[in-house]
Length: 224
Image 1 (cartoon, rainbow, N blue to C red):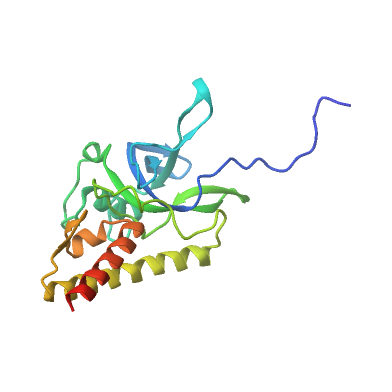
Image 2: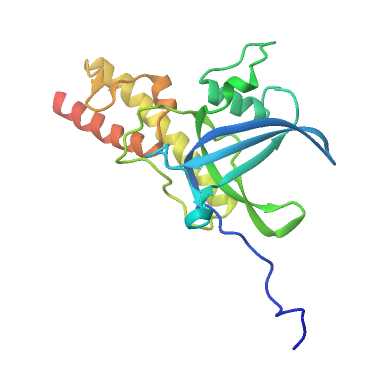
């Protein structure tokens, strides 16, 4: 027996399950590497039901928050990931020519889908990533009962992810239509969530929306 050890598969670090999470921007810096100047976004991940409970790695004294590093180009052109994240963190669209203070974004939160993508340098290894187009503003008062990653397996395909995002979009459209119809019946608010509008719906997790859909449907049936 030599000193080389045993043959084994390539190491695959434990990944956070795919799903909808709260992403807290922990740090943002300018990095210079082989691809030139880039913005490094350091995110902490937590369930939508408990934004303060960050996903950790290690055990005992070695336990610490798991960081998700993402890199973007400098600039905020419309349609870019950096623009999407900045607007989600700020809770509004940026005006043309506006230059947000990056330090003001630190410690702010957004909701987005976490997915697993093949590593560019080695496609056989997967790594965590924020799904493009999934970020939206974080609503501070997330009810605990219905939040969290839902509807996806631990190792979904891109088709599964696209289907889940499409289902989420359809759910939001249904709830927005229900709110407009409920307004005609003078059902302008519901217990636990209070007054609702299109903006509020856009900030809610899927679990919340499913509950609201059920509550509004029952309320409208009772009012008929």
